[in-house]
Length: 357
Image 1 (tube, rainbow, N blue to C red):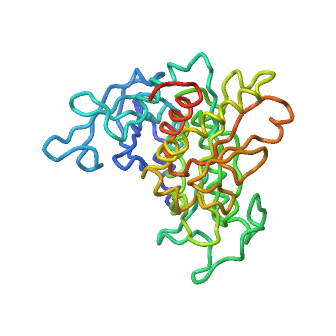
Image 2: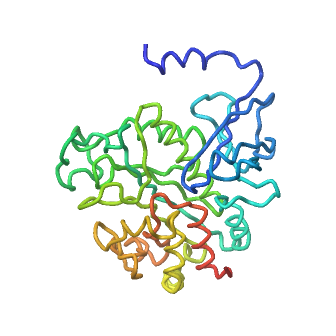
């Protein structure tokens, strides 16, 4: 009997009126997620219903061993697609003993900015690319030695030899829908064993909340299949596409009739803050993204800002349909796949909506 079948009979047991709440948070790397479960004697309906909890920050790169308690403040609640029933996934912010946000807690400042720009109704959609690996960190489905055929047949591909890991993709998609994540679609990407899913449109702080939880769900799903996930922006050196988190953005003025003028004004503002944005678009202040943004493989060069209609080699792209309609959104193609969506969306909102740094 498969392990999943063995587990299922236990998950069907009555919970005795109790609920399991999985607390999820970002650790000290700013990239990785951690989690642990609390039993509650009622079903929470809002994050505020859940108590503040704590964990050993010295084991997650967020505190010293001499003062190791870090506090989990509940901020976003989702249905749990793994335990199901009344059980929940709970996204949390992390705070030090003195009630200051930890260094990896980028949500607090993001939320403050989103409150300042709320009248602009900022909408975001993020295209999350990732790569599947086996447990030896070899690209899933690739030959044990050598390389697969060059890129070409894999993007939105169909059929054995063209796509690897579709079961994980389908399971993740359905699990996100169950959880209440605003997942908008998925597709196979240009490099074999590389995939993308899209989250949005989300307004304000919701974008970061939904994307982080979608990443958690992806990691859990892949874990059950015995497969690893990497968000590294250039997982395979050489003539292979990297992985980004292309960020679609609009304000209400950009979405309404005549909005193309506001889109071009936004791009002009983005062009003047290019270096600052690059530092916000991966966890290592641009060093990770430097391997990806080379001017090749559908990217712009990291050192030069560019824009254009339907140009996937530009820093910022205006979709063809938006240019023809005269309104819509822009796509910032610079963020890396491992970028913190709170930092990305805060930086975009600050620049376009004129919020001081």
